[in-house]
Amino acid sequence: MNFPILSKPARLALLAFAAAAMLGGTGCVSMDEYKRLEASQKQALEQLAKAEYDLGNLHKQIDALNAELAAKDDLIKKGLGSDALMKERDLLAARLADLQKKYDELVALAGKPDLPAAVVDALQKLAEQYPDLLEWDSKLGLLRLKDNGHLTFDLGSTEVKPGAKEALKMLAGILDMKEIATNEIRIVGHTDDVPIRRTAGSLNPTNWYLSTNRAHSVREVLQGDGVSETRMQAAGWGEFRPIAPNAPGMKGNEQNRRVEIYILPSKVPDNLTISTPGAAPAPRTPRAPAAPAAPAAPAAPRTPAPDSGFPMPRPLGG
Image (cartoon, rainbow, N blue to C red; front, side, top):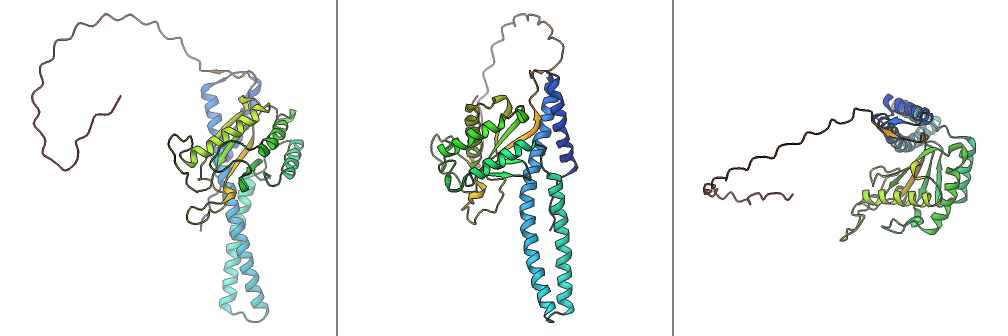
């Protein structure tokens, strides 16, 4: 089985973060440059999210192969092995080595973000203070707001519950630490694969809407606790980026119901101005009034088309 790994463009995208930080002192960036950096960030984050899922899958397979190898070795040591059994053991060992190599490549490419030690320590302690609610992912440098037992949101709701608001208030203080006070924050919502019960006028007709609106709810709480709106972005992946297998029959998995908060290496430029250089538009020349149109000739009567068994198309509304 082949497992995708992060590509060279992903590494280049990560380098774009540094370029974004360097723009902080210029005070002005063009719209094209800003969009390019934003696209690079998005690509890198998508690669990192996929790497996290692949890491989990590979790690489980490595553990399973280790168990198989231990069983084969035990049989061989007891003299119950044969050439065929030893060959199978060696094939398993080779497969294990290949999986381990891919795992190590993913770890190296995903890597830990370059966050200050004081910030990492504060995030780790915050997660330890709320173990049922928060999880610090040191591989990807993100704080995961879990929804085990619906501690963060009620079923189908986007309103953050009081206990989660308390933890987010403490997180806001960490995000405003001087070491990262200008770093950009990306908030991403996820759901399991249990379908939404659609109701008339619902603001969350699908899991995609639910995940995005939950991310915005977390953003609003952090903004209310003092984190600048110019630093934050909210998005949603719906059910399409699980970190654990959902149960068969669309029964979900609580691990996949989560909101992830990334602290990006890119920084908000001082006095950010979006500008696109270009010449001023030329003055418009008034147009002469159009001559009155001649009356149209009456249309010829239409011959009914033969009945095809399908309704005739109707004109679209404006």
